[in-house]
Length: 250
Image (tube, rainbow, N blue to C red; front, side, top):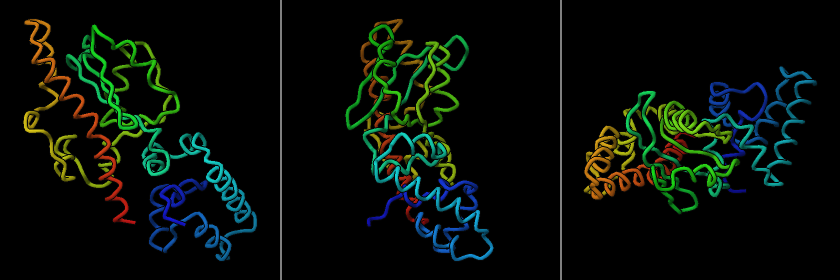
């Protein structure tokens, strides 16, 4: 069987967290089967404990064999949702927003989603209200710092509630020692941007929107949209590079 990141998630067994999983990895345990055999051969596990692990293993195997995406998307810790990428990439929806600021009076201006190699952009005063009709409830939302900013911002402004599984790449990258914001993270991962967007930061977005609103500056709007779309598409590349880093550590 080819290596499956999902089948190497030992955190799917009850009582195993991140640190315990790392400890088991150092012992050469890489799959659910490895862990089951380990438990059965270790006399320190009681018969009852072995039975619980075996029951859980059978549950996981049934879910995997039946391609039960819902089971795993709801069971995996959010930071571990990357494990579904290789087998369920069609369920990943990359999302990024631009706003007029970060105050309670700020509003969203441009939002893009990138899913199945297709990018869709929603602009304030044009089609932004249709964003929420497009996002399927079972999609995994992938953001950078979206748990603290993008998602709460949209929920507050539009009085909606996202129930989707959510992978925040900032948390995943921090676990790999990669910090400094999205642009810095891209650099550390070897990613580059088009020349006309190099040097742009999130703080430029409100200024571009203001130019568009005040002066009907369509070039400013075009730059803002291009910047937002690049942010959104790059999230996929960041995820893939992060997964490569994780593989190197396994």
